[in-house]
Length: 492
Image (cartoon, rainbow, N blue to C red):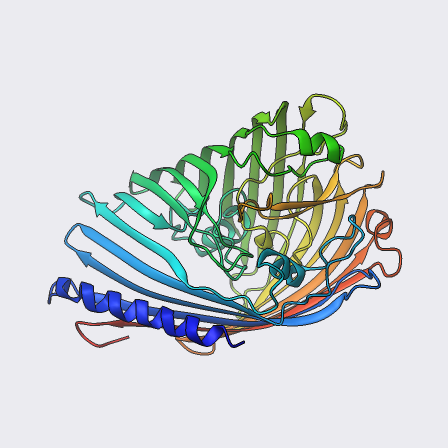
Protein backbone atom coordinates (compact mmCIF):
# COMPACT_ATOMS: atom_id res chain seq x y z
CA UNK A 1 0.00 0.00 0.00
CA UNK A 2 2.79 2.43 0.86
CA UNK A 3 4.39 2.03 -2.58
CA UNK A 4 1.25 3.09 -4.37
CA UNK A 5 1.19 6.75 -3.27
CA UNK A 6 4.63 7.80 -4.62
CA UNK A 7 4.04 5.87 -7.84
CA UNK A 8 0.76 7.64 -8.47
CA UNK A 9 2.45 10.94 -7.65
CA UNK A 10 5.15 10.06 -10.19
CA UNK A 11 2.56 9.21 -12.82
CA UNK A 12 0.76 12.52 -12.28
CA UNK A 13 4.09 14.40 -12.34
CA UNK A 14 5.16 12.74 -15.60
CA UNK A 15 1.76 13.39 -17.15
CA UNK A 16 1.63 17.07 -16.11
CA UNK A 17 5.26 17.70 -17.12
CA UNK A 18 4.68 16.18 -20.54
CA UNK A 19 1.53 18.25 -20.95
CA UNK A 20 3.48 21.42 -20.22
CA UNK A 21 6.27 20.54 -22.63
CA UNK A 22 3.84 19.78 -25.42
CA UNK A 23 1.47 22.69 -24.80
CA UNK A 24 3.37 24.80 -27.31
CA UNK A 25 1.76 22.72 -30.02
CA UNK A 26 -1.71 23.79 -28.97
CA UNK A 27 -3.55 26.20 -31.25
CA UNK A 28 -7.13 27.22 -31.92
CA UNK A 29 -7.32 24.80 -34.83
CA UNK A 30 -5.54 21.87 -33.17
CA UNK A 31 -6.48 21.54 -29.49
CA UNK A 32 -4.83 19.15 -27.08
CA UNK A 33 -7.21 16.65 -25.48
CA UNK A 34 -6.47 15.30 -22.01
CA UNK A 35 -8.08 12.07 -20.81
CA UNK A 36 -8.09 10.04 -17.62
CA UNK A 37 -9.23 6.43 -17.15
CA UNK A 38 -9.42 4.91 -13.69
CA UNK A 39 -10.51 1.31 -13.02
CA UNK A 40 -10.80 -0.26 -9.58
CA UNK A 41 -11.83 -3.89 -9.25
CA UNK A 42 -12.35 -6.05 -6.16
CA UNK A 43 -11.82 -9.74 -7.04
CA UNK A 44 -12.86 -12.77 -5.00
CA UNK A 45 -11.73 -16.34 -5.78
CA UNK A 46 -12.61 -19.76 -4.44
CA UNK A 47 -10.33 -22.04 -6.45
CA UNK A 48 -10.63 -25.82 -6.64
CA UNK A 49 -9.48 -27.07 -3.23
CA UNK A 50 -5.73 -27.50 -2.87
CA UNK A 51 -4.91 -27.78 0.85
CA UNK A 52 -2.80 -26.75 2.67
CA UNK A 53 -2.58 -23.64 0.48
CA UNK A 54 -5.22 -20.90 0.30
CA UNK A 55 -7.88 -21.42 -2.33
CA UNK A 56 -10.24 -18.65 -1.13
CA UNK A 57 -9.07 -15.05 -1.17
CA UNK A 58 -9.77 -11.50 -2.31
CA UNK A 59 -7.58 -8.72 -3.66
CA UNK A 60 -7.93 -5.28 -5.28
CA UNK A 61 -6.77 -4.14 -8.70
CA UNK A 62 -6.21 -0.44 -9.33
CA UNK A 63 -5.39 0.91 -12.81
CA UNK A 64 -4.90 4.60 -13.63
CA UNK A 65 -4.26 5.67 -17.24
CA UNK A 66 -3.46 9.31 -18.08
CA UNK A 67 -3.15 10.51 -21.67
CA UNK A 68 -2.80 13.42 -24.06
CA UNK A 69 -3.72 13.42 -27.73
CA UNK A 70 -3.76 16.02 -30.50
CA UNK A 71 -4.68 16.24 -34.18
CA UNK A 72 -2.73 18.71 -36.37
CA UNK A 73 -3.99 18.65 -39.94
CA UNK A 74 -3.14 15.17 -41.22
CA UNK A 75 -1.02 14.22 -38.22
CA UNK A 76 -2.06 13.04 -34.78
CA UNK A 77 -0.14 11.83 -31.77
CA UNK A 78 -0.90 10.28 -28.40
CA UNK A 79 1.06 9.96 -25.18
CA UNK A 80 -0.23 7.86 -22.31
CA UNK A 81 1.12 6.78 -18.91
CA UNK A 82 -0.21 3.75 -17.01
CA UNK A 83 -0.01 3.18 -13.26
CA UNK A 84 -1.24 -0.28 -12.20
CA UNK A 85 -1.21 -1.60 -8.63
CA UNK A 86 -2.37 -4.73 -6.82
CA UNK A 87 -3.42 -4.65 -3.18
CA UNK A 88 -3.21 -7.82 -1.09
CA UNK A 89 -2.13 -10.35 -3.72
CA UNK A 90 -2.29 -13.71 -1.88
CA UNK A 91 1.11 -15.09 -0.88
CA UNK A 92 -0.34 -18.44 0.17
CA UNK A 93 -2.10 -19.34 -3.09
CA UNK A 94 0.62 -21.26 -4.94
CA UNK A 95 0.54 -24.99 -4.26
CA UNK A 96 3.80 -26.91 -3.66
CA UNK A 97 2.30 -29.68 -5.80
CA UNK A 98 3.45 -28.83 -9.38
CA UNK A 99 0.25 -29.99 -11.08
CA UNK A 100 -1.89 -27.77 -8.83
CA UNK A 101 0.30 -24.68 -9.29
CA UNK A 102 -1.14 -21.17 -9.11
CA UNK A 103 -4.64 -21.07 -7.60
CA UNK A 104 -6.24 -18.26 -9.59
CA UNK A 105 -5.10 -14.91 -11.00
CA UNK A 106 -4.28 -13.51 -7.57
CA UNK A 107 -1.49 -16.07 -7.41
CA UNK A 108 -0.35 -15.02 -10.91
CA UNK A 109 0.02 -11.40 -9.79
CA UNK A 110 1.93 -12.45 -6.68
CA UNK A 111 4.34 -14.75 -8.54
CA UNK A 112 4.90 -12.35 -11.47
CA UNK A 113 6.05 -9.49 -9.23
CA UNK A 114 8.81 -11.14 -7.19
CA UNK A 115 6.39 -12.56 -4.59
CA UNK A 116 5.12 -9.10 -3.70
CA UNK A 117 1.60 -8.75 -2.27
CA UNK A 118 1.47 -5.00 -3.07
CA UNK A 119 3.16 -4.56 -6.47
CA UNK A 120 2.84 -1.22 -8.27
CA UNK A 121 4.62 0.60 -11.08
CA UNK A 122 4.26 3.46 -13.58
CA UNK A 123 5.30 3.15 -17.22
CA UNK A 124 4.78 4.49 -20.72
CA UNK A 125 1.66 2.74 -22.01
CA UNK A 126 1.30 4.38 -25.44
CA UNK A 127 3.37 6.88 -27.42
CA UNK A 128 2.76 7.05 -31.16
CA UNK A 129 2.66 9.33 -34.17
CA UNK A 130 0.14 8.75 -36.96
CA UNK A 131 -0.12 10.19 -40.47
CA UNK A 132 -3.48 10.37 -42.23
CA UNK A 133 -3.47 10.16 -46.02
CA UNK A 134 -6.37 11.95 -47.64
CA UNK A 135 -9.76 10.53 -46.77
CA UNK A 136 -10.55 8.49 -43.69
CA UNK A 137 -9.29 4.89 -43.72
CA UNK A 138 -5.76 5.53 -44.95
CA UNK A 139 -3.11 6.02 -42.27
CA UNK A 140 0.32 4.95 -41.02
CA UNK A 141 1.20 4.73 -37.30
CA UNK A 142 4.57 4.28 -35.58
CA UNK A 143 5.41 3.92 -31.90
CA UNK A 144 4.04 2.11 -28.85
CA UNK A 145 0.33 1.31 -28.96
CA UNK A 146 -2.33 -1.31 -28.30
CA UNK A 147 -3.34 -3.60 -31.16
CA UNK A 148 -6.33 -5.96 -31.43
CA UNK A 149 -6.92 -8.34 -34.33
CA UNK A 150 -10.40 -8.47 -35.82
CA UNK A 151 -11.29 -4.80 -35.32
CA UNK A 152 -9.98 -3.38 -38.57
CA UNK A 153 -13.35 -1.87 -39.52
CA UNK A 154 -16.13 -0.27 -37.45
CA UNK A 155 -19.42 -1.78 -38.63
CA UNK A 156 -22.50 0.44 -38.66
CA UNK A 157 -24.79 -2.50 -37.97
CA UNK A 158 -24.98 -2.76 -34.12
CA UNK A 159 -25.37 -6.56 -34.13
CA UNK A 160 -22.33 -7.03 -36.36
CA UNK A 161 -20.42 -4.53 -34.21
CA UNK A 162 -21.20 -6.47 -31.00
CA UNK A 163 -20.22 -9.78 -32.58
CA UNK A 164 -16.99 -8.33 -33.91
CA UNK A 165 -16.00 -6.86 -30.52
CA UNK A 166 -17.10 -9.75 -28.31
CA UNK A 167 -16.83 -12.89 -30.47
CA UNK A 168 -14.13 -12.22 -33.11
CA UNK A 169 -11.61 -9.67 -31.80
CA UNK A 170 -8.82 -10.62 -29.37
CA UNK A 171 -8.74 -14.32 -30.35
CA UNK A 172 -5.11 -14.19 -31.52
CA UNK A 173 -3.77 -10.70 -30.76
CA UNK A 174 -5.07 -8.43 -28.01
CA UNK A 175 -4.22 -5.92 -25.31
CA UNK A 176 -5.12 -8.30 -22.45
CA UNK A 177 -7.36 -5.49 -21.21
CA UNK A 178 -8.81 -7.53 -18.33
CA UNK A 179 -5.39 -7.72 -16.67
CA UNK A 180 -4.04 -4.85 -14.62
CA UNK A 181 -0.86 -4.00 -16.54
CA UNK A 182 -2.29 -4.98 -19.95
CA UNK A 183 -0.26 -5.31 -23.17
CA UNK A 184 1.20 -2.88 -25.72
CA UNK A 185 3.38 -3.31 -28.80
CA UNK A 186 6.34 -1.32 -30.11
CA UNK A 187 5.21 -1.48 -33.69
CA UNK A 188 4.27 -0.05 -37.06
CA UNK A 189 0.78 -0.46 -38.49
CA UNK A 190 -1.04 0.81 -41.57
CA UNK A 191 -4.63 0.90 -42.81
CA UNK A 192 -5.74 1.32 -46.40
CA UNK A 193 -9.39 1.26 -47.32
CA UNK A 194 -12.46 3.02 -48.56
CA UNK A 195 -16.13 2.60 -47.84
CA UNK A 196 -16.86 -1.09 -47.36
CA UNK A 197 -13.33 -2.56 -47.39
CA UNK A 198 -10.07 -2.27 -45.47
CA UNK A 199 -6.54 -3.70 -45.58
CA UNK A 200 -4.58 -3.63 -42.32
CA UNK A 201 -0.92 -4.54 -41.80
CA UNK A 202 1.06 -4.57 -38.57
CA UNK A 203 4.54 -5.61 -37.45
CA UNK A 204 5.85 -5.18 -33.94
CA UNK A 205 7.34 -6.50 -30.76
CA UNK A 206 5.35 -7.25 -27.60
CA UNK A 207 6.03 -5.36 -24.41
CA UNK A 208 6.07 -6.69 -20.87
CA UNK A 209 2.98 -6.22 -18.71
CA UNK A 210 -0.24 -8.22 -18.09
CA UNK A 211 0.51 -9.70 -14.63
CA UNK A 212 3.89 -7.95 -14.29
CA UNK A 213 3.23 -4.38 -13.15
CA UNK A 214 6.25 -3.02 -15.06
CA UNK A 215 5.16 -2.72 -18.69
CA UNK A 216 8.19 -0.80 -19.98
CA UNK A 217 10.61 -3.54 -21.22
CA UNK A 218 10.33 -5.16 -24.63
CA UNK A 219 10.12 -8.91 -25.02
CA UNK A 220 11.94 -10.91 -27.66
CA UNK A 221 8.53 -11.81 -29.11
CA UNK A 222 7.57 -10.52 -32.57
CA UNK A 223 4.25 -10.45 -34.39
CA UNK A 224 3.28 -9.72 -38.01
CA UNK A 225 -0.31 -9.39 -39.18
CA UNK A 226 -2.13 -8.78 -42.47
CA UNK A 227 -5.91 -8.72 -42.98
CA UNK A 228 -8.48 -7.89 -45.63
CA UNK A 229 -11.92 -6.97 -44.26
CA UNK A 230 -15.03 -6.27 -46.30
CA UNK A 231 -18.66 -5.39 -45.58
CA UNK A 232 -21.40 -6.75 -47.85
CA UNK A 233 -25.16 -6.74 -48.37
CA UNK A 234 -25.91 -3.29 -46.93
CA UNK A 235 -23.84 -3.85 -43.76
CA UNK A 236 -25.55 -7.17 -42.91
CA UNK A 237 -22.44 -9.24 -43.67
CA UNK A 238 -18.82 -8.69 -42.65
CA UNK A 239 -15.95 -11.01 -43.58
CA UNK A 240 -12.21 -11.05 -43.03
CA UNK A 241 -9.23 -13.04 -44.32
CA UNK A 242 -6.03 -12.83 -42.29
CA UNK A 243 -2.50 -14.13 -41.86
CA UNK A 244 -0.26 -13.73 -38.82
CA UNK A 245 3.35 -14.59 -38.06
CA UNK A 246 4.65 -15.26 -34.55
CA UNK A 247 8.25 -15.55 -33.33
CA UNK A 248 9.39 -16.19 -29.76
CA UNK A 249 13.16 -15.85 -29.37
CA UNK A 250 13.22 -16.20 -25.56
CA UNK A 251 15.32 -19.36 -25.83
CA UNK A 252 16.25 -19.43 -22.14
CA UNK A 253 12.70 -20.31 -21.07
CA UNK A 254 11.08 -23.72 -20.74
CA UNK A 255 8.15 -24.09 -23.12
CA UNK A 256 4.74 -25.22 -21.91
CA UNK A 257 3.60 -28.37 -23.75
CA UNK A 258 2.96 -32.06 -23.06
CA UNK A 259 6.55 -33.27 -23.41
CA UNK A 260 8.47 -34.49 -20.36
CA UNK A 261 10.04 -31.73 -18.27
CA UNK A 262 13.60 -32.90 -18.99
CA UNK A 263 12.95 -32.78 -22.74
CA UNK A 264 11.39 -29.29 -22.56
CA UNK A 265 14.19 -27.99 -20.35
CA UNK A 266 16.77 -29.07 -22.94
CA UNK A 267 14.87 -27.32 -25.77
CA UNK A 268 16.47 -23.91 -26.38
CA UNK A 269 15.21 -23.30 -29.91
CA UNK A 270 12.91 -20.55 -31.18
CA UNK A 271 9.19 -20.80 -31.87
CA UNK A 272 8.09 -19.68 -35.35
CA UNK A 273 4.43 -20.10 -36.28
CA UNK A 274 2.24 -18.93 -39.15
CA UNK A 275 -1.54 -18.65 -38.67
CA UNK A 276 -3.93 -18.32 -41.63
CA UNK A 277 -7.69 -17.98 -41.42
CA UNK A 278 -10.86 -16.04 -41.85
CA UNK A 279 -14.22 -15.23 -40.34
CA UNK A 280 -17.74 -14.32 -41.43
CA UNK A 281 -20.44 -12.41 -39.54
CA UNK A 282 -24.05 -12.04 -40.67
CA UNK A 283 -27.18 -10.38 -39.26
CA UNK A 284 -30.31 -11.34 -41.22
CA UNK A 285 -33.67 -9.62 -40.51
CA UNK A 286 -36.49 -12.12 -39.90
CA UNK A 287 -39.93 -11.42 -38.43
CA UNK A 288 -39.82 -9.32 -35.23
CA UNK A 289 -36.05 -9.62 -34.99
CA UNK A 290 -32.97 -10.98 -36.71
CA UNK A 291 -30.84 -14.07 -36.89
CA UNK A 292 -27.08 -13.82 -36.45
CA UNK A 293 -24.41 -16.21 -37.69
CA UNK A 294 -20.67 -16.42 -36.98
CA UNK A 295 -17.87 -18.51 -38.45
CA UNK A 296 -14.19 -18.26 -37.47
CA UNK A 297 -11.42 -20.66 -38.46
CA UNK A 298 -7.63 -20.86 -38.54
CA UNK A 299 -4.83 -23.22 -39.61
CA UNK A 300 -1.25 -23.11 -38.32
CA UNK A 301 2.16 -24.39 -39.38
CA UNK A 302 5.76 -23.72 -38.38
CA UNK A 303 8.32 -24.82 -35.79
CA UNK A 304 7.87 -25.38 -32.07
CA UNK A 305 11.51 -25.53 -31.12
CA UNK A 306 12.83 -28.79 -32.65
CA UNK A 307 9.30 -30.01 -33.40
CA UNK A 308 7.22 -29.27 -36.47
CA UNK A 309 4.01 -27.42 -35.60
CA UNK A 310 0.51 -28.00 -36.97
CA UNK A 311 -2.65 -26.64 -35.38
CA UNK A 312 -6.21 -25.72 -36.19
CA UNK A 313 -9.28 -24.16 -34.61
CA UNK A 314 -12.87 -23.45 -35.64
CA UNK A 315 -15.89 -21.64 -34.15
CA UNK A 316 -19.54 -21.76 -35.23
CA UNK A 317 -22.17 -19.61 -33.52
CA UNK A 318 -25.71 -18.39 -34.12
CA UNK A 319 -28.62 -16.70 -32.42
CA UNK A 320 -31.82 -14.73 -32.64
CA UNK A 321 -32.53 -11.26 -31.26
CA UNK A 322 -36.00 -9.73 -30.80
CA UNK A 323 -35.20 -6.30 -32.16
CA UNK A 324 -38.78 -4.98 -31.88
CA UNK A 325 -39.11 -5.79 -28.18
CA UNK A 326 -38.16 -2.92 -25.88
CA UNK A 327 -35.36 -4.79 -24.07
CA UNK A 328 -34.05 -6.58 -27.23
CA UNK A 329 -33.47 -10.01 -25.64
CA UNK A 330 -30.86 -12.06 -27.51
CA UNK A 331 -30.37 -15.82 -27.28
CA UNK A 332 -27.23 -17.32 -28.82
CA UNK A 333 -25.40 -20.63 -28.88
CA UNK A 334 -22.14 -21.90 -30.29
CA UNK A 335 -19.40 -24.49 -30.54
CA UNK A 336 -15.63 -24.08 -30.58
CA UNK A 337 -12.89 -26.66 -31.07
CA UNK A 338 -9.11 -26.30 -31.17
CA UNK A 339 -6.59 -29.05 -31.81
CA UNK A 340 -4.57 -30.77 -29.11
CA UNK A 341 -1.47 -32.95 -29.21
CA UNK A 342 -2.09 -36.72 -29.01
CA UNK A 343 1.53 -37.86 -28.90
CA UNK A 344 4.13 -36.29 -26.59
CA UNK A 345 7.11 -38.31 -27.82
CA UNK A 346 6.97 -37.73 -31.59
CA UNK A 347 8.49 -34.83 -33.50
CA UNK A 348 5.20 -32.97 -33.91
CA UNK A 349 3.45 -30.29 -31.87
CA UNK A 350 -0.26 -30.29 -32.77
CA UNK A 351 -1.70 -28.02 -30.07
CA UNK A 352 -3.37 -24.91 -31.48
CA UNK A 353 -1.32 -21.94 -30.24
CA UNK A 354 -3.29 -18.79 -29.34
CA UNK A 355 -0.27 -16.42 -29.64
CA UNK A 356 -0.97 -13.12 -27.78
CA UNK A 357 -4.73 -12.93 -27.14
CA UNK A 358 -7.02 -11.47 -24.51
CA UNK A 359 -8.26 -14.85 -23.21
CA UNK A 360 -10.91 -13.52 -20.84
CA UNK A 361 -13.08 -12.39 -23.78
CA UNK A 362 -13.73 -16.09 -24.54
CA UNK A 363 -13.29 -17.46 -21.01
CA UNK A 364 -15.16 -15.08 -18.71
CA UNK A 365 -14.24 -17.33 -15.80
CA UNK A 366 -10.51 -17.15 -16.61
CA UNK A 367 -9.19 -20.60 -15.75
CA UNK A 368 -8.88 -21.88 -19.36
CA UNK A 369 -8.27 -20.54 -22.88
CA UNK A 370 -8.73 -21.59 -26.52
CA UNK A 371 -5.89 -24.15 -26.61
CA UNK A 372 -6.71 -27.90 -26.64
CA UNK A 373 -10.30 -27.06 -25.76
CA UNK A 374 -13.80 -27.84 -26.99
CA UNK A 375 -16.52 -25.47 -25.81
CA UNK A 376 -20.28 -25.80 -26.33
CA UNK A 377 -22.24 -22.86 -24.94
CA UNK A 378 -25.47 -20.87 -24.81
CA UNK A 379 -25.78 -17.25 -23.79
CA UNK A 380 -28.68 -14.90 -23.06
CA UNK A 381 -28.40 -11.10 -23.18
CA UNK A 382 -30.91 -8.38 -22.37
CA UNK A 383 -31.06 -4.64 -21.71
CA UNK A 384 -33.86 -3.79 -19.25
CA UNK A 385 -32.90 -0.14 -19.68
CA UNK A 386 -30.53 1.52 -22.14
CA UNK A 387 -27.76 1.94 -19.56
CA UNK A 388 -27.87 -1.61 -18.14
CA UNK A 389 -26.62 -4.71 -20.01
CA UNK A 390 -27.29 -8.17 -18.57
CA UNK A 391 -25.68 -11.39 -19.76
CA UNK A 392 -25.58 -15.01 -18.66
CA UNK A 393 -23.59 -17.91 -20.19
CA UNK A 394 -23.60 -21.68 -19.78
CA UNK A 395 -20.51 -23.57 -20.98
CA UNK A 396 -19.77 -27.28 -21.29
CA UNK A 397 -16.01 -27.72 -21.65
CA UNK A 398 -13.88 -30.63 -22.75
CA UNK A 399 -10.19 -31.09 -23.47
CA UNK A 400 -9.82 -31.95 -27.16
CA UNK A 401 -6.94 -34.36 -26.49
CA UNK A 402 -6.77 -36.28 -23.22
CA UNK A 403 -3.02 -36.75 -23.79
CA UNK A 404 -2.34 -33.02 -23.86
CA UNK A 405 -2.68 -30.32 -21.16
CA UNK A 406 -5.32 -28.07 -19.64
CA UNK A 407 -3.92 -24.69 -20.73
CA UNK A 408 -4.28 -21.30 -19.04
CA UNK A 409 -2.92 -17.83 -19.79
CA UNK A 410 -2.75 -15.36 -22.64
CA UNK A 411 0.80 -15.48 -23.94
CA UNK A 412 4.17 -13.87 -23.32
CA UNK A 413 4.25 -11.06 -20.75
CA UNK A 414 7.61 -11.43 -19.04
CA UNK A 415 11.20 -12.35 -19.90
CA UNK A 416 11.31 -14.84 -17.02
CA UNK A 417 8.27 -17.05 -17.68
CA UNK A 418 6.75 -18.60 -20.82
CA UNK A 419 3.32 -17.00 -20.46
CA UNK A 420 1.14 -20.12 -20.62
CA UNK A 421 0.52 -22.61 -17.81
CA UNK A 422 -0.34 -26.26 -18.44
CA UNK A 423 -1.82 -28.90 -16.15
CA UNK A 424 -1.94 -32.61 -17.13
CA UNK A 425 -5.16 -34.07 -18.52
CA UNK A 426 -4.38 -37.44 -16.89
CA UNK A 427 -6.11 -39.28 -19.71
CA UNK A 428 -9.42 -37.44 -19.19
CA UNK A 429 -11.35 -35.31 -21.69
CA UNK A 430 -14.29 -34.30 -19.47
CA UNK A 431 -13.24 -30.91 -18.08
CA UNK A 432 -15.82 -28.53 -16.54
CA UNK A 433 -19.28 -26.92 -16.66
CA UNK A 434 -19.71 -23.19 -16.03
CA UNK A 435 -22.65 -20.89 -15.27
CA UNK A 436 -22.16 -17.15 -14.96
CA UNK A 437 -23.99 -13.83 -14.90
CA UNK A 438 -22.88 -10.21 -15.40
CA UNK A 439 -24.42 -6.76 -15.11
CA UNK A 440 -22.75 -3.71 -16.68
CA UNK A 441 -24.31 -0.37 -15.73
CA UNK A 442 -23.30 2.89 -17.41
CA UNK A 443 -24.34 5.04 -14.47
CA UNK A 444 -23.41 8.32 -16.20
CA UNK A 445 -21.36 9.58 -19.10
CA UNK A 446 -18.20 9.21 -17.02
CA UNK A 447 -18.94 6.39 -14.57
CA UNK A 448 -19.62 2.67 -15.07
CA UNK A 449 -20.27 -0.05 -12.48
CA UNK A 450 -19.77 -3.70 -13.47
CA UNK A 451 -20.58 -6.93 -11.65
CA UNK A 452 -19.66 -10.54 -12.49
CA UNK A 453 -20.17 -13.92 -10.80
CA UNK A 454 -19.36 -17.43 -12.05
CA UNK A 455 -19.59 -20.97 -10.73
CA UNK A 456 -17.71 -23.93 -12.23
CA UNK A 457 -18.05 -27.63 -11.54
CA UNK A 458 -14.91 -29.53 -12.38
CA UNK A 459 -15.17 -32.88 -14.13
CA UNK A 460 -12.77 -35.83 -14.41
CA UNK A 461 -9.69 -33.84 -15.55
CA UNK A 462 -10.10 -31.37 -12.67
CA UNK A 463 -10.86 -33.97 -10.00
CA UNK A 464 -7.65 -35.84 -10.86
CA UNK A 465 -5.69 -32.74 -9.79
CA UNK A 466 -7.96 -31.28 -7.10
CA UNK A 467 -9.68 -34.25 -5.40
CA UNK A 468 -10.68 -32.31 -2.25
CA UNK A 469 -13.17 -29.98 -3.94
CA UNK A 470 -14.06 -29.94 -7.62
CA UNK A 471 -15.99 -26.63 -7.51
CA UNK A 472 -14.82 -23.07 -8.24
CA UNK A 473 -16.37 -19.64 -7.70
CA UNK A 474 -15.16 -16.26 -8.91
CA UNK A 475 -16.68 -12.80 -8.85
CA UNK A 476 -15.80 -9.13 -8.98
CA UNK A 477 -17.24 -5.66 -8.56
CA UNK A 478 -15.68 -3.01 -10.77
CA UNK A 479 -15.78 0.80 -10.82
CA UNK A 480 -14.69 2.57 -14.01
CA UNK A 481 -14.25 6.33 -14.39
CA UNK A 482 -13.45 8.12 -17.65
CA UNK A 483 -12.81 11.84 -18.00
CA UNK A 484 -11.63 13.81 -21.00
CA UNK A 485 -11.32 17.52 -21.66
CA UNK A 486 -10.56 19.61 -24.74
CA UNK A 487 -8.00 22.21 -23.66
CA UNK A 488 -9.15 24.67 -26.32
CA UNK A 489 -12.80 24.80 -25.23
CA UNK A 490 -12.57 23.44 -21.70
CA UNK A 491 -15.44 21.03 -22.47
CA UNK A 492 -15.56 17.35 -21.58
